[in-house]
Image 1 (spheres, rainbow, N blue to C red):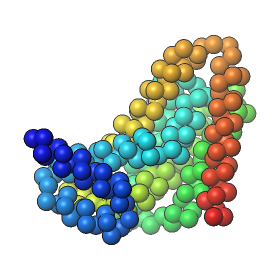
Image 2: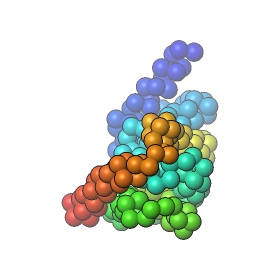
Image 3: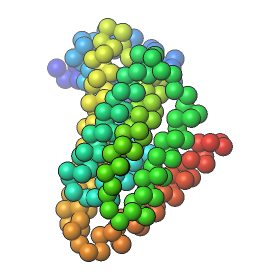
Image 4: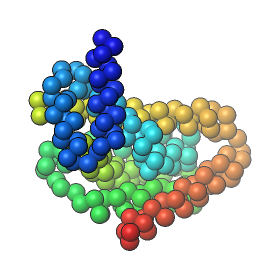
Length: 221
């Protein structure tokens, strides 16, 4: 049993370290020799790691959603819209129904973070229209997930299973970010009169500056 899980951990590490197509193809070949359950566990871990610790841009997007209304119910509604949207485009891209160009997707992901951060700064409360905006941006983020997963590859004999498990891993990563933010910030400061002035706006300004830098970097460099 220990050898089995050591092999799973080793293959996961190789996929993370060698995510270029050639290397990924070789490691996926090794995955196809494993049971479907073992391969699924590898992709569950990869999906989680694509958020924590590797998905800094996705982390900032989730944090931006959380900041404006720190109660769990509103942020979970937004996270649900985001989840449904990125699951759709991730699936469509991995089954080659759509072929999103990374040169467009990556800058738009940065712009989505910038937009939400600026809305946090200039909007004093959560608007109902934000669910629709989050859904649209989720479609774009799903294309970004597909780009990362496309480089890693999927084993042919458990293609759908591993795709679903990768997506579940992403969701678990997002949930970890939300719950961490809740227990570090909202649990203690969410109902304080100074929450917006000293937490929401300063953190949103920092996130907006990072996102603006990424936008320029991804368009011009």
